[in-house]
Amino acid sequence: MAEEKEFKNLVVQGAVYKTTFTKKFENRVNYVSPNPNEIYSFIPGTIIDLFVKTKQKVKEGETLLLLEAMKMENQVRMPFNGEIVKIHIKKGDVIPKRHLMLEIRPI
Image 1 (cartoon, rainbow, N blue to C red):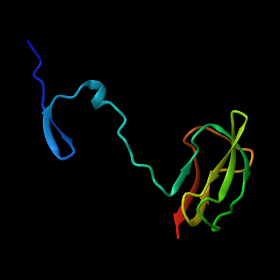
Image 2: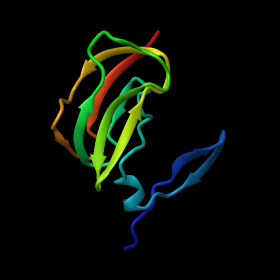
Image 3: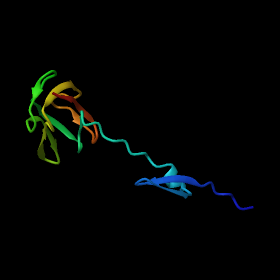
Image 4: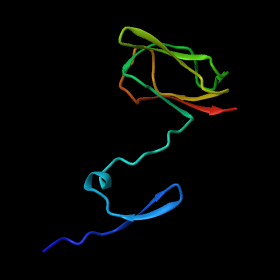
């Protein structure tokens, strides 16, 4: 006996389509919008230096820390004028990719 497929609604730019989903689509990891007030590592590496402290006010473009990865020093800069809320790393830490390094807030 053939299995009856269940149709579901798929919305694309406001248009609603009735379709079936594959198992791969149903089991996918859903996209979560990044929080602009959190700075994550973009590559695994070692924290070489940290130039900020908690509650410090920082201007857009200022260097927050140095992250060494693959024998290169990468400057992590402030994306907007703000304040450092919490620091989750320290000098010498070896961190993986997508590790929360800093929490910031706009001022």
